Amino acid sequence: MNRIITISREFGSGGRTIGREVAQRLNIPCYDHELIDKIAEESGFSKEFIRESGEYATSSAWFSNALAARDYHGHTTQDQVFFAQSRIIRELAEKESCVIVGRCADYLLRDKADLLKVFIYSDMQSRAERIVKLYGESADSPEKRLKDKDKRRAAYYQIYTDMKWGSHAHYDICLNSGVIGIEKCVDILAQLY
Image 1 (cartoon, rainbow, N blue to C red):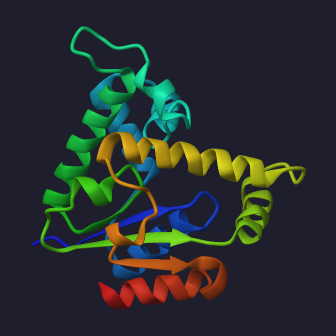
Image 2 (cartoon, rainbow, N blue to C red; image 1 turned 90 degrees about the horizontal axis):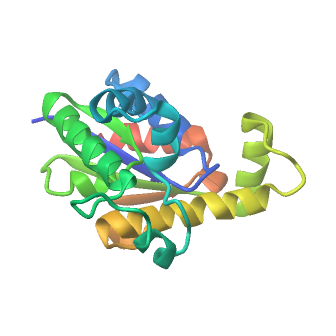
């Protein structure tokens, strides 16, 4: 049976980096941005649209998302992206052991017997410093960007899982990358694998 690690994360916490390094250490694939290409191919939507619609609600307000334009089946374009990425994530988990970053993978694979569900978080200051340094975000108000991204991720997660994003009850382990560091997070997850 394939062993899967899913990594959910706060924006700027280093979850993507941790996922890549864990996969590299374990010599298994890591799927994050690679999913965007696969989803674009299956769904016909642009990579840019999928990049924004594959993890983020169009608005952090639940009511706004409920009123989004729908097709004759009652689905939004974001729903169609979610359906495509769900199929792809399940296929990848059936095919091979891997690390999957974000995109509700923890929920989609919840019934899989050999699954480690991880949530990476950190304090606001550490995350703000990280996005300014690594992502080139403006140093003026990175906290506002962090809060917006996290609210939209939380709304997306709520819409498609009916669960609260970041709640420790939904994960096997939650790691504070700001306190223990990226490398120690990688060490812990590699040992748990």
